[in-house]
Image 1 (cartoon, rainbow, N blue to C red):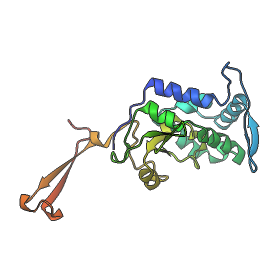
Image 2 (spheres, rainbow, N blue to C red):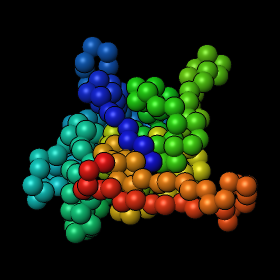
Image 3 (spheres, one colour):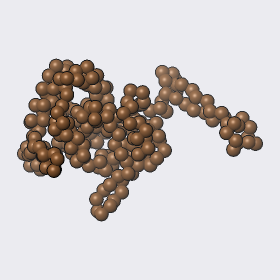
Image 4 (cartoon, rainbow, N blue to C red):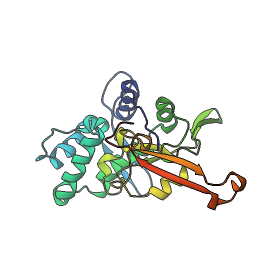
Length: 223
């Protein structure tokens, strides 16, 4: 697994993109709404922030949508623990959950991938992920994995450090796992583990029994 470096410019672009759902080009607040057959609602930036503040009234940090967008991994993990310990008070209605889901659905994912400047899945470091043009619009083959799944933690639907670009295979295999794997924004398997391939018998290099893989744990040691 490889580490993704997130620049301050990427974070600012991402935040601007999400908040543009609530403001016009002149900076005036506008209504954020959904008008579909089975889901119809309207809200504003101020109203959504009031929901967030009320749900996390007893949390140590004063939270709003803008802060949720940019929380670091450690802050997300701490908030996850708080949510797990306070399920009743932090629980959202189905409509309130959909506010966050819709923000994610309307996210310009190819732009986010482009800003991160990565071309390979950070989980497997094998499958390419890239953008392409289709009918004049930019698309991407990458999927965005919610490191902490959005069905359990809808608040993290558009938190930048919760959105990991990945290939389809890794996204599906990871599913809702989070605590037992590395987080690509803060660490790399390459920093902690080294693998060495030994050939026991060069005459039979094509035979799997003639190969040996050694693993060396280098975490907290000189690399």
